[in-house]
Length: 87
Image (cartoon, rainbow, N blue to C red; front, side, top):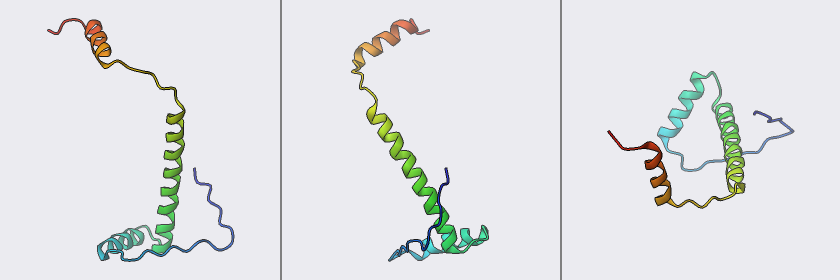
């Protein structure tokens, strides 16, 4: 669900105290994808934002579901009755 549209100048994000290993790994992945580090990170952050939006929608959906009280002892007894005796 990519619906990103570039409008004017984008935002600038600065990350301080990034571990050298992290930068090396990110840069290597960007290079292997034929992208600049900035473009690679822009795409990864856009995908992360999409995932977070989807998670937020799912959480809202689940929160809106009616809560059904469950008696665990009764549920176990019902399952055992339906299943029958174990071999």
